[in-house]
Image 1 (cartoon, rainbow, N blue to C red):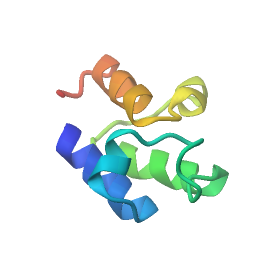
Image 2 (cartoon, helix red, strand yellow; image 1 turned 180 degrees about the vertical axis):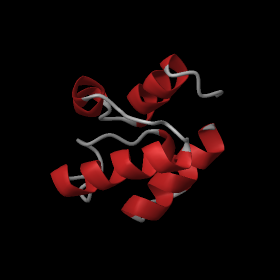
Image 3 (tube, rainbow, N blue to C red; image 1 turned 90 degrees about the vertical axis):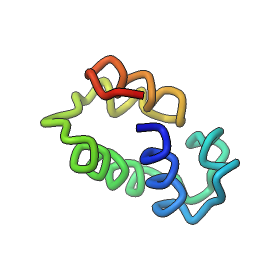
Image 4 (cartoon, helix red, strand yellow; image 1 turned 60 degrees about the horizontal axis):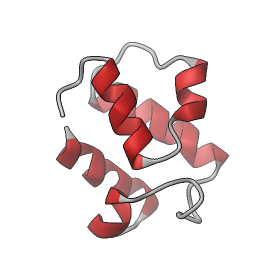
Length: 77
């Protein structure tokens, strides 16, 4: 899961692997509200998650927070 998430972040935000591993909305200039929604939709599709709740969407603002929520949803890390 981690490699898949890192690759997804690299592709969406056009960043390198090191940046993707430590990415957050504050550190990636291209991670704005529109790209955040695109990221959430892609995560739902790529990890076969039926729905990410609004509270989860708001809290998924970094690579680490995304990994934690995916783990909580039963996605293997």
